[in-house]
Image 1 (tube, rainbow, N blue to C red):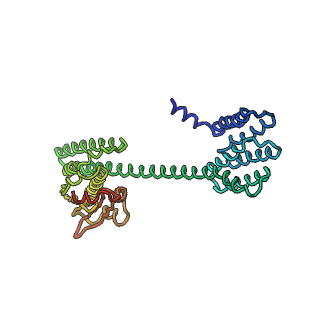
Image 2: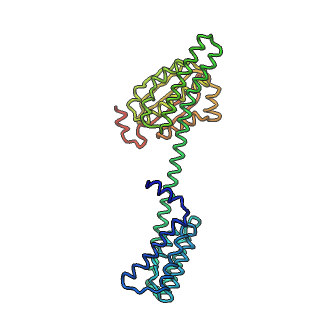
Image 3: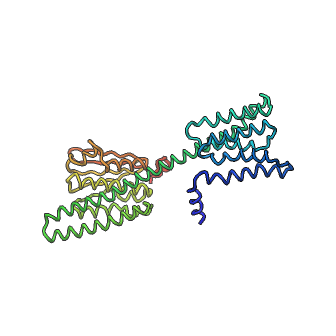
Length: 368
């Protein structure tokens, strides 16, 4: 109920939302002197309302509203009514520093000019002017600092949102692309096979589709950490063997001792690399070697297929979504990834992923 009311309140126009605070401020400025024994006069009440009324425009016309309040204070001071809420005008300039977006120094300049004019209207000397300026510009500095903090937080939120979208796009590409490639290979083979082999291919397609659906649902479940439980390289090798690609795994048990983000990163990189082998290399066998570096895990995926074609096109001519996604995933974990042809033939992907990007615990990992 409370969140609904807050949402409805924020949906109102700025003028409607700022009217109640302006009225409350006017009541406070009038009420406090009356409680102290001051005598209420209609002119004084009108001037107080005139000082507080521009607060309604503090979001839409921040500097104009502050200058309007300050002008009323100057008029009231000149005619001998100083208690009309000069602090309201000072707060208005602070609010202007927060809401004014075009030329940031303008609220400070306007506040300085107003403070100097107020000092002379009040009959103060130049000796007290620095103190008045320092006191009057503090709300402006505070408003400016709060605006910078707000803009920085908003920018960080936009960056985090963009990074999250890129991460989801990479995961969707890895999951969907891998399984669709397997389905395509089975479908192409079924068209040229005997009825018995075609039925076997259809069973394989149904199995791959079910696996893809399960992984997609886990991915859409906000990519929780427990998705790493499905990042089983042995199961991946078994599935690929059913589609004609034999995978030899060396050092796969080392990944089990790595942190969860590293485990998932290794799995996605190996999955995408082997998918590229099936798509582009024309190889029937691939090797996945997982070793230990000074800071983390080194993953090497090699095949002896064609050195040309789509895989080389991705790595050398125009880096495709697959290689780019793997490189971005490695960089996100603080590591590096290289991909390119190997001699005498084939393709190699090498990823070096630290277990701790900040370097903490690297020595313990290397000696474990």
